[in-house]
Image 1: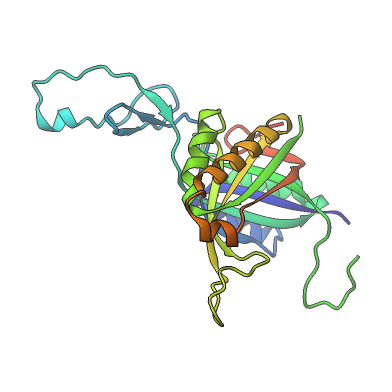
Image 2: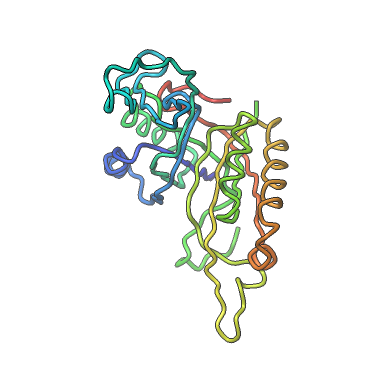
Amino acid sequence: MDMKKIIAIIRDERAYQTKTLLKYIGVKYIMDFHVRGKGQPTGFVRVPDGIEIFRRDSGVRLLQYHRLESYTDQSVPQVQVEKELVSCFIPKRMLIIIAEDNDVSSIVDTIININKSGRHGDGKIFICPMVYAMDIEDNDDVP
Amino acid sequence: MIMKMIWAIIHYESTQMVIDALEKTGIHAMTRMDVTGYEKVRGIPNGSIGYTEMPKEMLMIVLADNEVARAVTIIRTMVKASMKNHFVAATHEKSRIFVTYVEDSYTIRTTKTLA
C-alpha cells in the first residue's frame, strides 16, 4: 500500500470550503498552514514611482489605475511610463494531505473543482512520494 | 521532465536577498512560511537557559530538474553573503536546503500538469 503526500497551495478564502468537501469524500487528516506565496509575474504592475496597480485579468485591461497625479492635480497630463510586471507575496493556504495511492485522483479532482475560478492565483497541487506513514499511538514496528 | 521541490530553511536576515537574487534569474514562483526550530547545538546556549526556538523562514520552490542546481547555488551564496555580519546567528544556527521528488503537479486554473 503506497502512500502519497499531496501539497495543495490554494486561495485563502476557499480553504474552509475545500476542507469541508474533502471531509465528505473520506479524507480524515489535513494539515493546514498559513503561508505567503507568489507565482509567475502576471498580475501586478510596478511603475517607476513605486505605485502598484492590481490587474485582475492577465494582460488584457487595467481595472484600477491609481496615480498620485490624478488625486493632486488634474491639469497635469499623465506621463506614459514603462511598466514592469512583478509578482508579490499574498496570503495563501497550504494543505498537506497524506493519502493512499488509490484516493489521490479523487482528492485532486475535488481540490481542482472547488478552487478553479479561471483567474491567475488559483494555486498549484504537488504530489510527492512518501516512504511510509503510521499512527504514533499504534504499537506496530517500523516497516 | 522531472520536477523537484526545494525546501530552504534560512535566516530572516537573508530572506529578501535570496528572493531578489532568485527573481533576477527568472525564478519567480515560491512559497514562504515562518518556522521555528533548532539544530545540533540547540539554538543559542545562554547559561542554564538556552534559546531553542530560533525563528527561521522556509522557502518552498518547485523547479524543473535542470534548474535545481542553479537555484541551490544562488541560495547558498546569498545566504553566506548576507550572514557575514551576523556572527552569533550564523555560527549557532546553520541554514539548510532539502530537495525532494515531485511525482505529479497540477495548475488549478488550467487543470494541466506542469511537467
